[in-house]
Image (cartoon, rainbow over all chains, first blue to last red; front, side, top):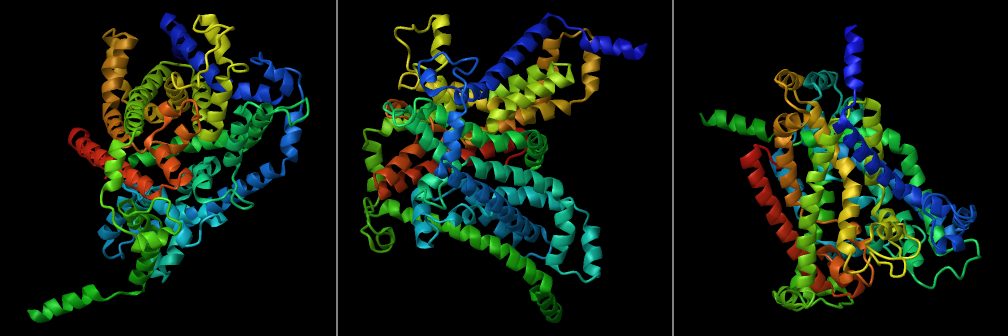
Length: 294
Length: 316
């Protein structure tokens, strides 16, 4: 009796509810429509699309745009580079940053405060893009694949997040391992790393999304060559092409630069969409971890 | 007595294997920071040397002629100065004023939803744009605002804001701010609300139950219980955002720029890129970047100071 009463109370709608639900549904529709609009564009006949009116459903349904994208070798080069960059970038940053985080949490580290402040300062002040360009030139990273990996291998912010987690691991575990004669590296790899899986997963997802979505690095520090062109950079190029006035004529009458760029966008979004339900949960947890800092 | 001190000093100085290992680990991190963060700061010297159009930047950095603050004063007298500065400051301020309260309001509204599944699906849908890259998001915005194929003009026709004969180009200088602002809010509101939803979830339910007994309405509950309860979170995030006011996203603005709207969409970060990388005015670009970093640093320190005073916690 009590339970049914409670349930009825929960689901009974009053007029403010209808307003709230309508506003939320409208907002969700707008958000979803951003994606839907590109999806229907990507399945539309390019010429028919160009005449306008593709708002709810594809016009002259065709897979030709996707065929062009699937045959575009540069798109797949960029796709490959971005996949490799994301994978290598995540593994390198996670291992290296977690290792430094371990060092920074250790009670055996002398002058910890000095390290901490030297690290922290870089979060708030940077040399800017021209000096960075010069440094990358000097050390020979300019226009190489490693320009995406090495500079971001150590992230101070993520180091602080991970080391905050490490601080919560019971010290008795460390002492027990120490008594057994395990070295620092072994303690890190066999005790701290397995125990910090939740925070590592969150940080890994942050890093992965950043790597997948970034195009600034390609613009600034590479010539967008065989091993340095990235997916987002290439998409930007496709989109810029599409908004140029004269484009479209070089393709067949089925596709235009615009509809091709939509197909490219959708293909580039597929990995994000596949991982999204899984990512979303972790991100929600992760932002809590991040906010505990300070 | 001196023996005790000597023993103490000896004990403190002695490094065992563990000290060495963690020292090496931390120093590896230090090395990476030195190369990729502090070395570029040395490169700021370019902003004080005659380095525009330089063919060999390293040589200029080491042996070039000093020009003092010439580039900085040149920037102050640049024809673009007021344009870029007002775009950067005003646009970011407006973005802050909207992007900041929007997630709070959204979280409050979402909190009123009592169907868990509905709440979750709304949240999942509205958070998604956060994960779309700016390159793609910019492309979508450009597509939506297209004069012939975009959906915005037909909608505005219905609302009487434009006509079929004379479609409005929303990506031109006159409208681009509106486009930047609206697109930015849609992209960030769902994601931004996560932190407030978590703060709301941690509010003691007894407060609401007591209020219900007193016959308090839902709006009153939201205003007098929920908002004050999440006020500390709000303060910290507001100050954090003020601190980040100038370190705006290069990609956000770059992805929406075109030749027509540049006068209203050029901000410091994109301006530095255009000067340094497209025009090869290295010294000038470095100087402006330096100026940008300095102002951000000051804003950050100030907002952190206030955050500590007001909310009792800052970021460092």
